[in-house]
Image (cartoon, rainbow, N blue to C red):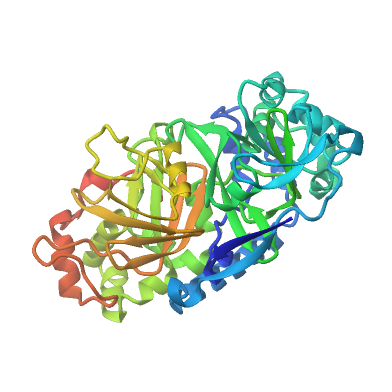
Length: 473
């Protein structure tokens, strides 16, 4: 199945970095403390080729950042029409006697096979989804969600060969029921998302809601490439657009596992973020005052190693190699973290329209409306952990391309690395707080005296103020 869409070379590689890791077993069991090494081991064994996934993600980072540095974001020079193939690996998801007609989706004019079966009935009738269907049968709430005709839902169904990735020594061991139910919910979207609408999004809201996200949906990241469409970077859509009585089904070739927390996500890529991690370690910087149970969202603008290099040798020597500089480094880190608000490129979990916020960006899933506009611009000011200093974010959408700019000049090189407790937006320059009289710093390299002048109101001789002194990066 092919779709013609306007995309950039950058879009194909600027994907979210979603890599399952063992620590998520401890997070996903719905905040319970009754977890064992056996449960965590089963979780990690679900994806045996973790080294291969990490290698692929590293390559994606390299490609995305290289493209960004070469100004691949200039739409006028690079915009082209590319045919994207979606879900072409399977042509007979349902037996022919279950198909009533080849039909067009009335809402978006995309076509596919139709059936009078519900999603629940369809995955039982299919020869490709027996294993996932058997998992669903153990959870009455999921059976009801996929069988009800009261509202449309979309399901990304792992085909049976996705379960072959579980190694033999892990297949006979069941994880906790809460863990499995969380995974099942992460495969389901409330609402109607045929393939064309999936292509129009960078992130998608799932039926898995998370306390660390303020009770908002955990999201999937959509990555569009010349070789297909992937969810959370590693799971390819192998079959698209089975229109059912209560929604639409897409088949995927890997089990979708909710992403790790922000801290773990960043630590998985030392070749990109080792300087950021070193800064947090040397300063003792932490992003939240209380245990994560009180967290209702997180947005981290993560500078790469290259971003720190661009500050210049003098600034780096001062920040990392002097006792005084460490206090300023801690303040600088605080300016990159937004707590209790999560800003994706196409959705915002934070202040609502009725609050004091002046942002036009809709709150929560109202952000889906961004997809229907060919050209749209949103501006939002996010409060950081650095006192009264905010980050100004501009989001511009043109067809399938979304550009995020911070403080008027710093681009987001890799957007929407969705995490368990928020999102990571990778920036190609370190963010410098605006001066009360001089405004934003317009260059990458910064003199030490200029840096001190901008940060000194937020630094005490014996440490940074308590406004950003607790938690964990």
